[in-house]
Length: 188
Image (tube, rainbow, N blue to C red; front, side, top):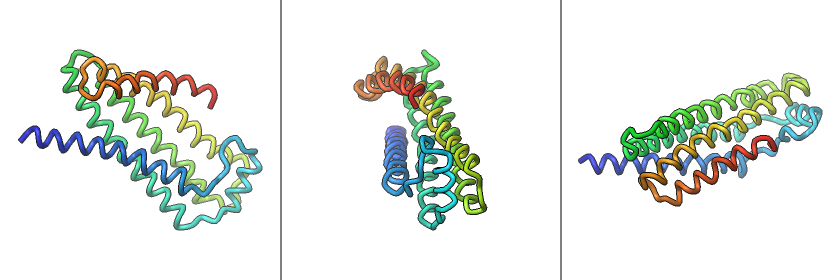
């Protein structure tokens, strides 16, 4: 009945959260082609992208990242639903989890656009400045998600600690992680 469907939904949400992390780490860290990041010189970034031959593996990595990014909103929706049920409408925190999590997913998805364009057009003689700007757009979007994720974690942690709808250590971990994410933004 209802408990079976609830259990399946929560397992789906948890699985999507885990898949998001695992697939993103594999795609970004293990399979990444080692392109220079935004700390490299403009000339180094432009030269690397013009010389880089786009392969099927590059497109496969992009596809893996897309799959990971599509798992994250499912996790966020299920988490917000669990928190809303536990909170019983007493606070706005579950809605903040939903809003910040979905905004983070949108920003993460949009951050792929400059990298897609860079992969698509790099061998057409792209300038150093434009290549560096596209890499910077991707990096800045990633950093912006830290603020959104911090707000999501803080709100989730508040509900988890007060309602015990999930293990309390998860709530405390979220409440500790949220300000740490915010504190690292200026250093990025």
